[in-house]
Length: 139
Length: 150
Image (cartoon, rainbow over all chains, first blue to last red; front, side, top):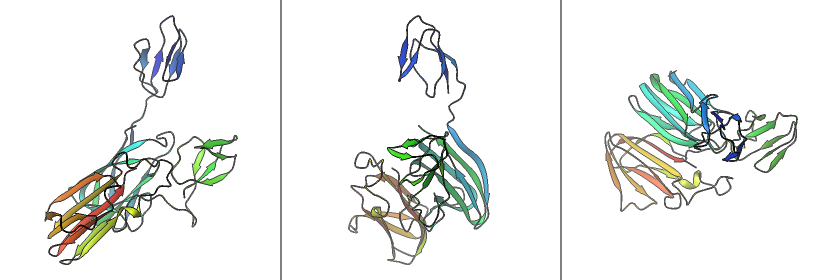
């Protein structure tokens, strides 16, 4: 979370956060108030949830999930999965009959809401599948 | 539904649902709160699902169809129901071999044609799209999905 200080002589309230004169506070959002001074970007607001190279032979799965405090119930995620070699199946939340199919050389990108999506499962469906998965928090 | 344990020493209110310390309760959505811990799914669990039935790969003979219905995935009971306001579904069709028609809401008179190597992806409102159908013009390999976004 970024850290801001109030270097003025007046109390400042922004987004429900009160800074008395001289206060320095770590907050969980960026503030754009000309009367506040950005002291540091730290502690950082993390936006990258997952960045990984996966490898999944036929029938073998790799799972990716997320939890508090990485996301909250209103977070939106951008999920990008490339299949560099081999074809894959992409399941959401659980491995069942329904899936998104990605062929070798393709990339699948979609947005998902954290309240209805908690896990991505990649399963190799032909050849030795390898690729990259990136999951980024949009908000 | 996903079940959550209140692992804190105090009661917690999660979207109006009170969990006493040690309580385990079902939720119709995933919860992200400190000390509110997702439990392993059991036989009573209904896992939130986003993909309509028949999402996946299909090999079709000429005139065979694959149908995907939004009624599989859209519900009015969710806490966060926001549909009718913004695109809430996404659909995808890839024709890996052969050629297929893609049409909406059982209206086979108006369709898009996808030939080998073509893909079509779009989003829309579940109030406008109740069903998508992929019909093979010739023997075809297709990939399809219909997904709930919100």
